[in-house]
Image 1 (cartoon, helix red, strand yellow):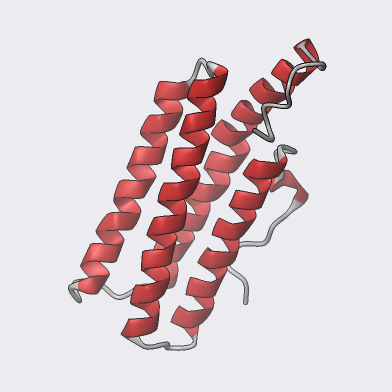
Image 2 (cartoon, one colour; image 1 turned 135 degrees about the vertical axis):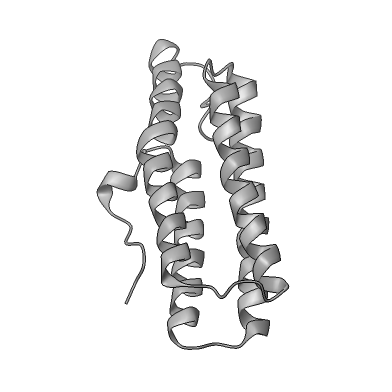
Length: 145
């Protein structure tokens, strides 16, 4: 059973954002499948480490692009990134120290947050990027820089 299914409603139609979201969703699904299969702590530690690393990388890239493009909601968007990254790191630390087990509920929370973030804040960012492209179609394509 897949935790998150990529649906058209998740696509923001900015290729680099959609590709990175797809990678994050695939990783969440892999973690979910491993939890359901009763995988070892070692494997789940590795997957959580990858989730943290991929999330850090994705957020850093998004934030770099937002600054580069002068995105007006940068600070709020960045704050939301910090909140989720902190939650993932806390889960990673607690799991590593055997304080918590990875559960379907914890994964569902991450899926819910990701869904809300993509369909809300990232969709708004994508609209901003598309508007920039429409305002100056001869300029370099900011969604591919």
